[in-house]
Length: 343
Image (cartoon, rainbow, N blue to C red; front, side):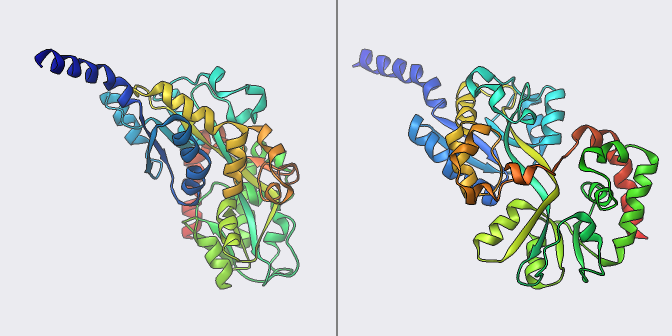
């Protein structure tokens, strides 16, 4: 009997690593995005591998990842991060290197999705939105957004320098391709703030992503800058909100693996599934954020494609958010904006 007990204990000990790998902690921003990930990634991965996914919501606190890595107590296995955090975390050595031979062919992906220690999860965009029931003539450009004679009423804009200064320059005639080149100069920054001042009396600021659709539906504003996924969610609820894609600013969120996770191999398998064309196409059907794997686009119908930042029609006049520019000049521009907004 003692021999049997010892043998049983030995078998259990041998099984411990496998048992530890049967659970994976995946962290994201929750909301409609988290719900879409559950359908497209979590449920298929659990079914295919028998692994239990523990889903955790957070607000992008990079400090939590840093503390885990530095204390060597890593409990998060796969984390969705925003682009500045992906870049900064890679530089600081907080993330494991990505094994792209397991993820897929780099050539199949949006070039911005390919990183040494991160994989682009999806493309989202800050766009111009309006209520189709209240505005019969569609605004076509950022110049229209600034035109309060043609389109009387308030405009909702995110309180901050990011995106607004780019939109201001496009409203003033700068081509999307030249925006950061112009904004990087003193004259360009002055020009952007001057253009913002023209609209200032008609701006209603927003600070949370849920606010622009609320303002539009309530009739508080006639146009708004907004996250395209928030407009998509309102449309799914039956609201007649519309998007003007010209001059939208797109960015990516990324998958990373915190350095030191005991489940690195399993984490790579999860990211590989989430980067696959079929899974990304399914994700895009649940929320209008664009696939980073270009092969997913061929799997989507015209109705879904029309709502994505990555569709050819929507992407042709779009601007890629410049992480390096804002890392370099963001602090000074945000201080200037705060001072300007308070005047």
